[in-house]
Length: 201
Image 1 (cartoon, one colour):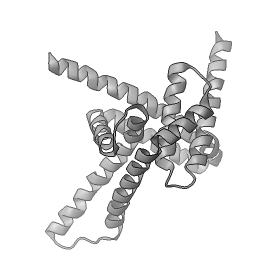
Image 2 (cartoon, one colour; image 1 turned 45 degrees about the vertical axis):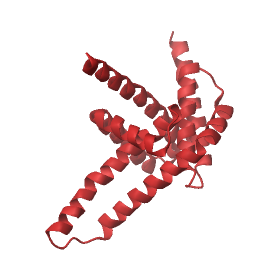
Image 3 (cartoon, one colour; image 1 turned 135 degrees about the horizontal axis):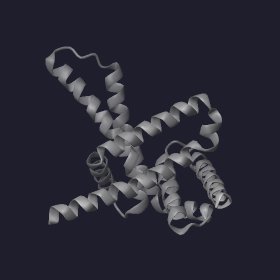
């Protein structure tokens, strides 16, 4: 039994390392990070469902299939989030109205961050356009807020660990986080379906 568990653990570590490498290589151009993330999540889900080691061909086909819409979402979120962050850093509010506008931008940047946690997971599973993916991700993130905050916390902890252990970033971290995101999406979708059934009754 212990031998079987050890083999399963090492197999998933290997898978996470392969996913990590593919995500980093295909996301090197920055502009392709969205498509790379979507393909990594789609492959992680495939591996979990099929218990297959068909990593490379599935990743490549998913990257091509989701490239356009994932890039649209990524560029849109990056531009919007970047504009809000720039404004927060460089804009000095003078007066009541300006101060209110400045404060409103903090929850806006929080919403951008939590939508990013879900949007590429949505694209990896469902046939939706860019706006549909963002809307679905926003609903999932906010209706499962505690889960979302937990996922955000784990992401931040992982990134902080990566600062002190660079090898973690290079070989494993992105792969593990994408596998975790795929598991979280399963749970979030299941919760919403349960809530919808309750509301229907």
